[in-house]
Amino acid sequence: MPAQAQARPQGNAHAHGHGHGHGHSHSHGPASPVSAHLRKVIAAVLIPFAAAVLTGLVVLWPGGAPPHEHSGLGLDQKTESGRVVKIEEVDCAKGSGGQQQPPPGQQGGPGGPGGPAKPKGPCEKSDIEVTSGPDKGRTFTELVQPSASRRYTVGQEVVLAYAPKAPKNLQYSVSDVNRTLPMAILAAVFALAVVVVGRLRGLFALIALVISFGVLTLFILPAILQGSDPLVVAVMGGSAIMLIALYMCHGLTARTSVAVIGTLTSLLLIGLLGTIFTSWAHLTGNTDDQTGLVHSLYPEIEIRGLLLAGIIIGSLGVLDDVTVTQTSAVWELKDADPTASWRKLYGAAMRIGRDHIASVVNTLVLAYAGASLPLLLLFSIADSGVGTVATSEIVAEEIVRTLVGSIGLVASVPVTTALAALVVSADRHNAGTGPGAGAGIGSRAGGRARAKGGRRRRAK
Image (cartoon, rainbow, N blue to C red; front, side, top):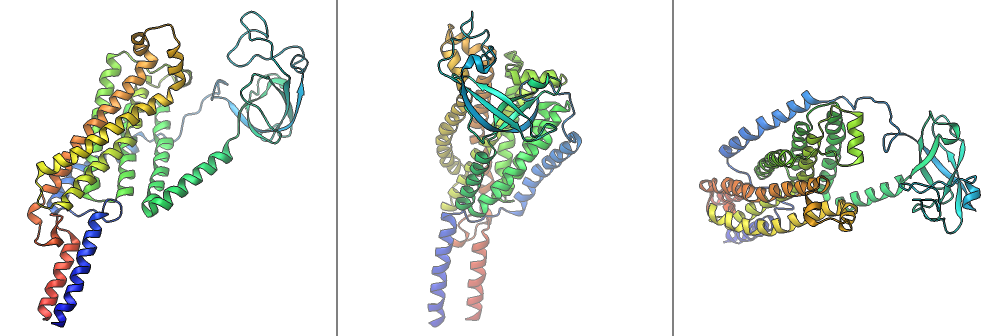
């Protein structure tokens, strides 16, 4: 009788712990293991894929971006640091020596034909000190028009464009402001929030983010500049990012492996559809000044491939979210109902997936629309029909990017859900009896509980 009384509290504690683990396994508890046979099947698919990705990284590794002569245009110019040391208000005509500099993008002098109206109000004469480079300590003057959108303050750090071949009085000009401090503080707040809320998993997510950024800057971008096919580089680099991020954040489990396979399948579909429709729509990818500048500096870059690479990399982050969520949903549904068939699991998880599809597609479309908002504003006031605007190359490129990525996201839901349901249903023959084996996939917790029960019966 005492032994029985002692056994009951242990059994109750086990039941409580088991229920708690299931209720929170998506965020805290480990994924239930699958059978050895299924692990071999998953490994047979993923190990060759991982080996191919590693081989691709080694073969295509660029060893840094190739050197080039600075054109002095846009972002391709030498820069130095500077600081605003003095500001005073002056008459615009006198401050510029009788010649005013028109705001960027406007031609002609003030009040002249095709030029802006005469400035209203005084100009700001800013003395800028060079704080880096061979001319450190040198000062020059920058005249800020009243209509300028950017104003300076004394002590403000700025970025200077440096043209060493220009006349001495024109070698330096302010190209931007220094935003290092606010950007660093924002990044620190973001990292703190992720770690406080996500704890250890949040820390792993930050590490994976740093590694992903490293793959992007050390492999993908330099390899494209070296002349490698941008589509191949994006597939290899994106696959490496996917493997590192998913396994680091979610663990080396069968559940994560199913999400990896679902993500890979969707990426291949996105690459195929992107190739077909960019070719069919005759999209060149050369639709803005930045792309044109890159192509002029590195003519060997295949610009259409660069467009396809952007579509794949842009879709990867959202794909990870969808596939991991769907896989976790199937595992949790199986834990909640160990007797559920493959069809029942698939149907229940797809109901979750349909809600996810609606929100994710809307998110993706709005993300692209937000990034292209100035462009959309220009077209909204253009004297052209909606059809003409939508089929122009600069807009059609964004439409193809959005819709191809959305098709891949939509397809990832049934594909990943079906794979996950097949994996957990294939392990039904390993299920034991009683609540300890409720997962239907050989739960380690249930096995330990049954072993303890056997030892107590033998002792009795």
